[in-house]
Image (tube, rainbow, N blue to C red):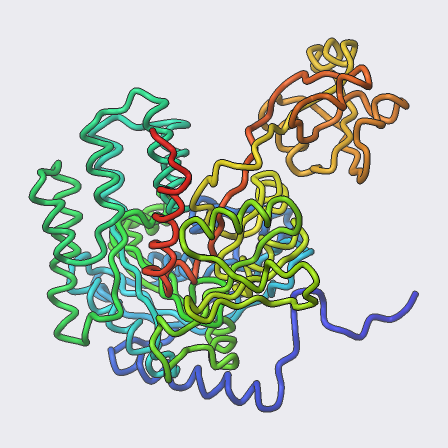
Length: 549
């Protein structure tokens, strides 16, 4: 067996100048933490699984590195340091020691998708303020975030702040629960107001709830918060707004608030956050470089009730941003090019037709003999490029493109971390389960069924999580209709447009999984850093597609 000398996948060696830059960065941030009176704490790299059960921000326990000790206990390599600190404070600190300000530096571990290049070990630095539930504590933590990023050399960033109690207050007042609540949360996360309006039109939802929710999405400053209060809110929502106003008033004592943006639609885990939550974004990264918020209920799982708020700086992401020298300090944000990735073929032509309709054309793309890879509209500061359909969400996720247009089938199958902001209402078809008449009977018997598809992820999710049926999934390329005809599979999962190919080969649609159409997707960081330009384009496209709800 050949000896492996490289580091494991997702882990890496850091040395030389890069190591020196990292140590310098960490030293500077420690100085900021110390100036606010925070003392360091070191917790174990490994913890019992119970420490993180229900206490991980994104709730994803599938990505944990798990081990067993000699007594059969399940151990995990920490995916997050905050629950470890909550455990330590509840077990090691007496009431006389509270409130306590703690900071940390350490590695976190996550078994992310093996086909991505993201690290499985990340260095995090953070601060936790336990024992103070006041707005002053919230403001102190936000001021530390601002000072830490500036100390790191990140000058052009957005600190987005919300309060989860606002949305929870609306859900509580208007009795929004179950699948409807989950759908609203997902659409809020994607900033997809059109889909929200469509969802509202398809369900019996209180008009006042719709009005308040849709109005709240557009409010990004203190004036917007006042507008919401003026229309009348329930007690929980009102308190959430008051808390944000109070925090903003205090934070001005520490620093300016120019880089802070309010987002009442920003949500984290309902089991984790209990009030203020925030994210920070900058150019040159694919995701937030800071995450944090108030988690007053977390310590209760360790036997004590201690209000707490904290944040984490993703050091590797900050280093990437600094290395890329991505912040356009020598130009205004409006002078930066927006980059749009389009799927080759019919989808690109339809997209460019729609973009031209709203004034975002690119004459270079009309030259079919051109060998160019990048097409530019200098007047609008927009770049376009064509990519294979499955690659479009990848370019957008990693920030190589700010915006992309891809089919819903690709978005579901690839599972990239992008914001699906708009249904463009063309390229319509359906994702279906298809087979002959005998296959319908076998499917209904709920026995093991063999399924062939170009979309194995969609097929598996549908049969296991929707139909609750055991399925053997066969990943194929090419003419999927051939599989059941030659006996390779019982059914297929594929896109159906007219159904003529199915009919000619003795097959039929047995079940529809979901509708498919072209969707506009946006990189999460771009949505924050280029919010004005991207939101303007979304609004223009909404009007051009003329959807009424």
